[in-house]
Length: 146
Image (tube, rainbow, N blue to C red):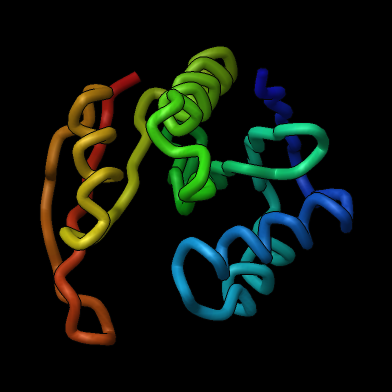
């Protein structure tokens, strides 16, 4: 029903544009900063879920150091939620990381993104801290031993 692909390094332009559009749809904000960061990160990993060549979900991260990976951002098109896409993308990411020798995966989320927080906890992440971001919103730091 769904196809999944792994991209290492810079994305094909058509895929990057679909992710930009999906990000803006999910988060209701401009994807400009995300796109700029994606172009700067050297060890970018993007996992994408497709339905008939259309990106319906993504998970993006990059290397923090040789043993730690930062799972940066992800989302699933609201029309395709509750179908296991987020879980599949997370499992794929963690398997990819293990095969490459990473020991730890770290991520952050906000309390308002409860589905993401619950997914992370369900998949073995521990809350290791919190902080308040530049917009005054609390952020939750999570980490998982691979």
